[in-house]
Image 1: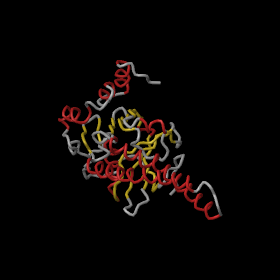
Image 2 (image 1 turned 90 degrees about the vertical axis):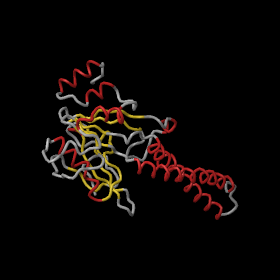
Image 3 (image 1 turned 60 degrees about the vertical axis):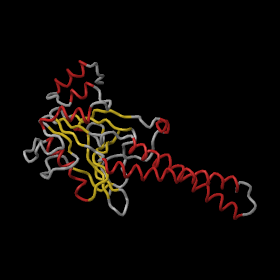
Image 4 (image 1 turned 30 degrees about the vertical axis):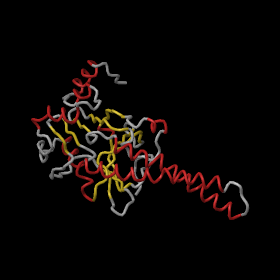
Length: 279
């Protein structure tokens, strides 16, 4: 299905509308919420362990496969007949496909799961409309990665986004399991041209893939149907939440303080206090 966002994103099921969705069931990804902000975990520990094992297995199988492919290429490089040329071309195509998959799927997938810390929480402040992420560079929905960063598996991106310019899209993973992911497309202001994207809720089955999107929209719209105490940490356990989830993960001090900013003026003062570039 085509999406209105450009460039297109593969596997698009549909675009998601903002506004209250009236989904009242609690979601197990919700970490913490108070009257200012909520925090969602994006990778549960069970999934992280499972996919780490899966990509590690693929890594172990791919390395000798690439080595064998190179050996076959060198053994066939001196053509004797048309059959040798055919096998050489097949081997080259297979080797290139394996190398592409290794550097753009297997290695990034392994990095994403091994170096995702504390579930890669995402923070939504409903009073300033700002969204904060602190995640592995490889925690993303893409195919091509900057090869330089493959040498830096711990590389992180810590970003502040404006909710007004984030648009939701549901995509599927082309598998028999029909697992869906919810992606936040970061758009240029007042356009559908995407400049970045954020994984909001990866790999869920069926209606489960819409629960986080629904809860966040209800929260930002101040919908009375949500319960701020539905998360792993209750509303009065903010210090415990920050100690166990936020501390020691590289969050900038200004950003942690900005979680609870109640106005744009207060947010601006926090950034000025920490000399944050607002350009």
